[in-house]
Image (cartoon, rainbow, N blue to C red; front, top):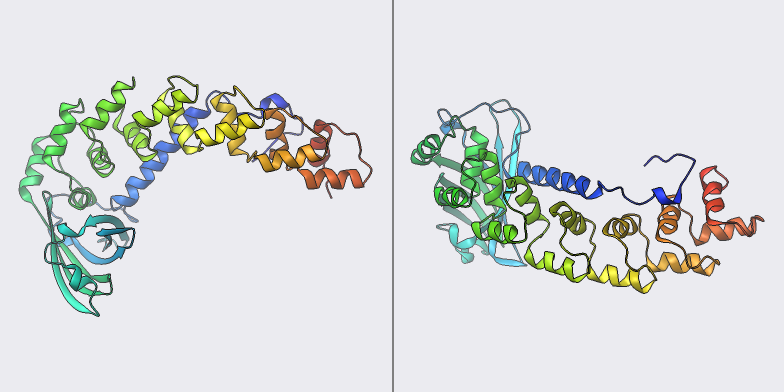
Length: 347
């Protein structure tokens, strides 16, 4: 991060657009997650529903995780026609792996064959499992009825990675109808898959709308789901004393972990009635009770939230203050200590 040499204490907190930037970051993160989970290609792929049948195959690996004993974490790999490599992972309930048993999966070693049946198509897997881990080959047979249904809904010439993502994440016509009934008649296909991945259901949409956030773009709903912004969290924010906040502010609070515990800790240190932006500044720059105790030990207490943030930005801590005192810099103000750090007198 770059800073000018002339520092104003009041300019070290986030601006009024910080929550908007946080939402933009959240949307970017959700886009990245979607890309990773939807077979984002490492080289361009131009295949569509008319010519993908021969290309829809690849390799798989799988592993049972102790924290989710009834699910299998699967990674799918595929080489594109242009020589690139695609990969995606998803957790699938063991019950959906038709033909695979837990006994086979945790054997000392056995060949396996199983299927994953989805509306968009059926995955056929062959390979080997040993002690909860497996690998092998997969092939996807697309469901022409699904492709035709999508075409009838206006989704023509779907790319092969889109069809693969639809099958992998179990995009169904019922889910699409549910979104339509909730007011999302024909979103872009990739957003449909994102909504399916992150479980954007009519119930969730109604829950968000009841908070006053109506007709949000699907991508914003995905961000809200990713960062666990729901009715319970909105009520928690109100109980913190902040009232009803815009969605981007709620997302920002989640991103920066502005929790009731953090707020109580800051209030116990004398920082009461702070805005959300100032609390985010304290969190972002690592202002903790331990840091403030260091500064207090060196004779600076109380200090304002803005001063605390500025000290953290320029790495003015207890050790730096002691070293400056040892060099004869006594009775300095906080601003003077910051200027010493800025101008290189910290050596």
